[in-house]
Length: 498
Image 1 (cartoon, rainbow, N blue to C red):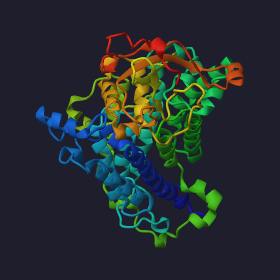
Image 2: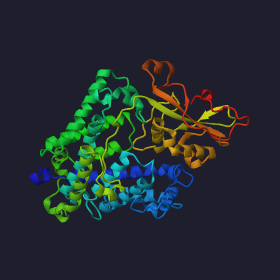
Image 3: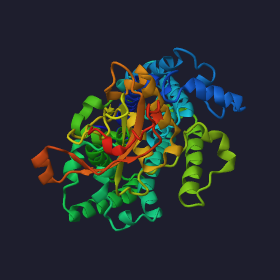
Image 4: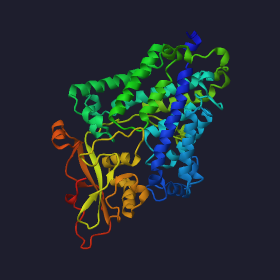
């Protein structure tokens, strides 16, 4: 049996947390890395080198765009940064220099977030930065971290991670009600959510067919968990705290089944893990995970100051309370910190979309017959089932969802994408599943927008299609060579079925 001091510790969960955070960093960097040249390379959609040069001409400083790319954005820089980040994540996963690995991983990922707009502006990107930064005070700064000699983590750093989990989950519910959105208030949001979310999984099609009473009950239960479970984390009783963590983790699992949200769900579950005490693990593994006190070093938190994690909590509290219950204005005295994207407020889907406009890009060689480009993951061909791609995040596919909800003039990157396709740029074409113009690039390219929705169960049985869609409309001006006769070849009615 473990003694009382060992039961109340968090040795096992903190040791596992560090390794799984390392794995998450590896996933995140590889996910960015396989897309980086097409998104950020010299012939990509939003070249980082162009962004940095423009910012420098505008008189910006490193502290406005804190990134390694500020000093080096030439050939090889993109690959170097994401590979270094992946190596840091691997070291952390193996327990090698975990503190230093967290610092390097944070700095490398910040380098992409700071200059990678709009493709690095998702909430799980900033969440990864905040978790990794806070973990620097939580994981040991040593050469080799082994479970047998692993110390209880700094308790203030542990509370910093718990407070992050509290803010993340509580605000997820708060923003939905604070927005005044009618579908959240009458609990009908899930009747739209499964088919309108950016990248649904195949399970979303089935969830969409559940009866209305079940959707409302599920929505109500979500609010109960998101409003209630965070408060269980601060109750000074292990069983209550475990219950709160389990409820949040279960909710994240349900969300992950029906939607692709990168590594957001994984990060949230990792934060839940930090709430599990050694007494829980001893029930399953007994003394195999117990280490005699004589074989442990002096507790890590006694060796380190409380000041660092306490400052983290203070800044996070100012950001949270000011952005949630105040006038939603940023504290001016914290302005130098905002560029580092490490102290944030969260909250997905404050307003539920009730329709699904979907952009389809098409090209032509003769100004009459149009062929569609098919993306790897976002809805396109109506007979293709939704895919499960998380924890990888296909960033162009995601941004296409946002673009469809707005005006093309607010999405300059889409025009860049279309021009790259007109040029037949291989790095950008690698982001897509199919290129209908392998022999030569198209002469014109256009963006059409359709209204997509899931098929009914009967339509699915009869046609095999997962999606149905309406008539197309032109989303943006047609790019490319004008037709020889000046005719109206951009008529969406001539669209080829994807």
